[in-house]
Length: 110
Image (tube, rainbow, N blue to C red; front, side, top):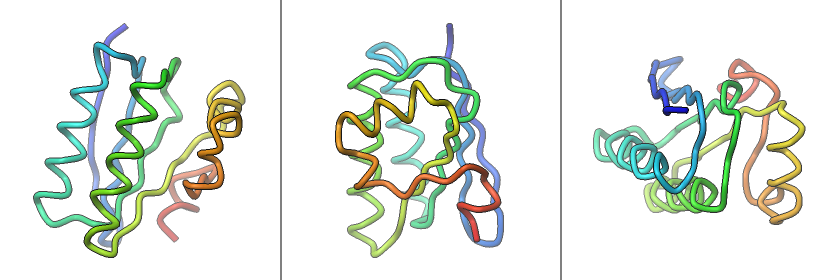
């Protein structure tokens, strides 16, 4: 499975919709996209994982790296996720306490 990435601007927040699988092969594309967003001056980012089927430790590392990037600019990186398998990964790794996780993009942007 490939990785799809698309961005939209909602009230000054960049929403990055991700689809497919985030693994050791596709994670570099996600990292590059997050870097591109921050380099463009967007420091309020929402990563929508609603269409993600699989997330491994490499993908988690990319999300943590993205969070660090926006925080150096006093920004935020919020996650949209309702997939119980993915939420379990966030809970087990302790990252559910690091990221603000929302059920919808609208809630994350608000």
